[in-house]
Length: 177
Length: 172
Image 1 (cartoon, helix red, strand yellow):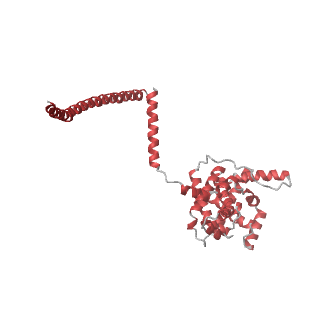
Image 2: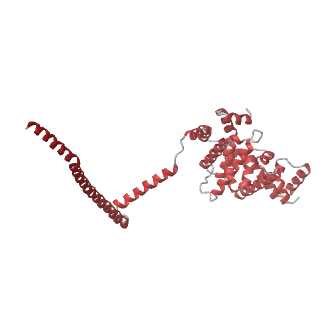
Image 3: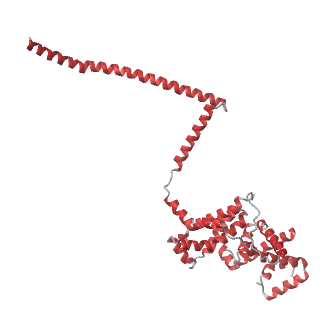
């Protein structure tokens, strides 16, 4: 089933179509929210709000448009708003280790695991715009063109933001080692 | 190529998105610059680790998301409630509770004495009103009795006299 068709069916009240939309986009929205809030409960609330808003405004969606872009923009605005309201970051917690890493070499696995954990908790030091593009590219694996389209910015800007984010993160990691 | 320019292009170099000429220039720079080389290794690490930072959506959240359509339907069915009235009722309730606290405790002595004075005034008013009403009632009853005496019972008396007179004449 294509997304356009899923949207149409969803508007008619088809639960299966809604399940498909949730399955396709919830991971992306959750990861964006988590990397902005650094709080599992807040991230869950934001994701729920975003999908509630999506469902209420689904009739406004033009089927020729880009649903992923629409959801990404809503997520970005929500997360940046949340970030601005909670600049003091009182609710931030160390993100837990829910990672699945190959366990071939136990020693290597532990080093890798601690590196991942370290990096995960350093992303919060990046500016929101840089963080958003980094999450979309390196965590969500989106193409530069897709990010540019979804965030409505030129591809050159996306490339430079991602490079800046990675450099900043690399310098933090190098300084922390 | 200098370090600043090399840093700008490092990500694209690692992702193999540069032209052959620029790619070779950076490669040459990295061979001679240990700090840029270290940065490049660190960047490669970040790029490799990135996908592993991906987290799965928790089960409870997925359930919450799946029930959104039902939630919206339920909200539509709920009758609109008058928030203003609820607010006023809550305020009145709170005020009564506070007045009770002042009346029954001595936490705020001025409030306590004011409440008792007010209550005694209300009681006095109630007693006076009752007395007034009873007094009025007795006046009203007296008036009623005298009215009935004058009109109804007086007519009955006349009838009785006239009837008695006729019959008395007849008997006599």
